[in-house]
Length: 283
Image (cartoon, rainbow, N blue to C red; front, side, top):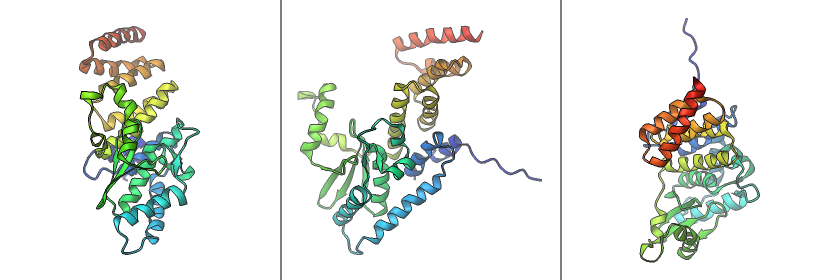
């Protein structure tokens, strides 16, 4: 008698989704991130909920609607009728990174709002893309009349001057002024789906590290290292998180792997000392 096959773990399911760049299922992979916090989450139900929103939106669309009319209708539906917007009062709440919660509460951060908006835009046939704008994720649509850049946190359409103003602090912080200045358009390149997913995970990583929530940080790093297997700084951070939890047997392999690839001598020296301490603890 054949035994029933074991369903994949949440991490195995996630890994299967993100193997290939061709046809990368950004929405499904982003929904699956929430399975660490919501183990009973049915990803397909969340995808179905968004399909229903898209069906509602399509019913409002005149058959002869052009791209600009489609975009206006989408923004009216998403930001006004449904009331999606930024979670201003609780910006650093981890729930803002979980699409199942964002769909329910209609509140999120720029990148998760963007993932939902992009899915609807592409469902309407709009050439919409995400933009890894410094400090604040954006979306853009190429229309016959020109490119439109939208802040998914507010629904505001941003012109070149608005974008330049928002870039100013970033440029000054990184010395990109005067002869080192670069045009705004350089910051408006399309973000590949894998990069968008990484930015979702990085937001969670920053929150959990700030809160010293080591178990949740490790769960996020496990996912990041599936998406970016050669991110050795994340291997290091996972090892250090295991050390904080008093798990030297788990910390040591990660820190050893990091040292085999480290290119920062000062950091490598500090990690080598920490590794010695952990090995002593093991013995």
